[in-house]
Length: 264
Image (cartoon, rainbow, N blue to C red):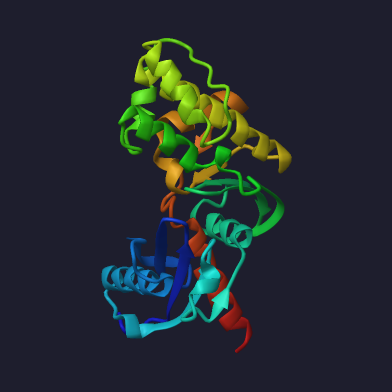
C-alpha cells in the first residue's frame, strides 16, 4: 500500500477533527480525534495517523494534506485549505452523486448547500447562532440527564406534543427546567426540541432551493429523531450517506488531489 498516492483530507470542527486518506476517489481510511487540551495541529496529526493506519500506510506516506472546517487555518501541516461548502459539494458528489442538496449539522454550525456536479450553487448557514446546531440539543440533553447519543431514539417514544418556544441554546435550558417541573416526560420534551430544530433547519434548506435526495451529514446525522422530524417538515426523504461525518474531509482530499493533478 505504500506505493499508492495517498492524500489526506482534514475537517477541523469545534469538538472533533475528522480525517480521511484517499487515493483517487477511493476512501482508504478514516478516523476521528476528539479535541481535548492538545493543539489543533496535534489533534489533526492524531486523526491522520489513525486514518493512515486503517489504510495500511504510514503518516510519512501521505503525499499531501488539505484542510477544511472551522479550524482549518490552524493546521500549518496542511498545504491547502478549502471552504466548507466546496468540500461538502465535492465530497457528496463522490459518496452520493444523486444528492444535489447537503445539510451539514455540527456542534456549533449548520450549513445547507445546493450543489451540482460537485460544485456549490447556493449556500445558507446559521450565522453563528447555536439555535440550528447540535449545541442546542446538547444543552437540553444535559438538563434532562440524557446523553446526546440517546436523545434521538428517546424522542421517538414521545406520546404528547410539547412546543418549545425558545430558539436560543442558552435560554432554552430555563424553558426545559420549567417543563420538567410541570412533569412533562423527557421524551416529550426532547421531541418538542427536535421538532423546533427541524423547523429552523428546514428554513436553511428552503433558502438554498433544496431538491429531493437531501443528504444529511455531520454529527447530528446519527440522530434518528431529527431525521424523522426533518422528513416531516420538508415532506421529502432525508438520506444519510456513507461516511456522514467525513464528507467535508473527503471533499478536501478530492479537491487537493484535483489541484495536484492539474499542476502536473
